[in-house]
Length: 158
Image (cartoon, rainbow, N blue to C red; front, side):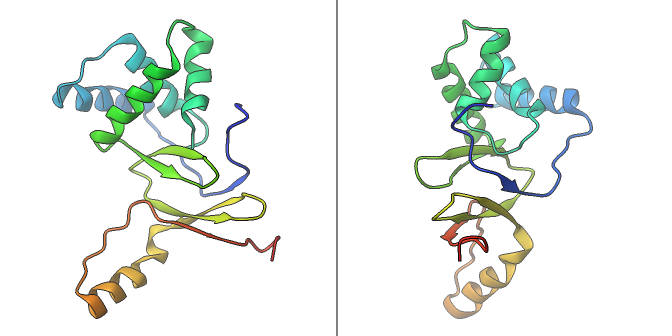
């Protein structure tokens, strides 16, 4: 695993029963939005969907892709992840200290990031629902948080 990977995650299991069908679906989504399906893009999508962790950095994906296809550059990985973000396949999440990870949007959740040790705790979207309801009730604001990151201190560092 690349050194840029965030520290240990506390997360629920994230598995995809039919990865091959997902690969086809994601590639088709790119094509529908005017994107070309190149061997580099295909390799990035395959690496993303087959990765054992759903919080991956561009470097994580590049390491997997370049192990099989060393001619695919990091810039291709970044451009492909950006294209996937534009068509709502992945979401880029900043976990502080320069750590940006990507995860599939079909797994909506939020993050608690420890300021001291850097640990990341995954929080189900349902935990934030009372906040969104309070924002609507008090401010008539219909929040739709998809990438909420809250910093603070974890139980080990308190």
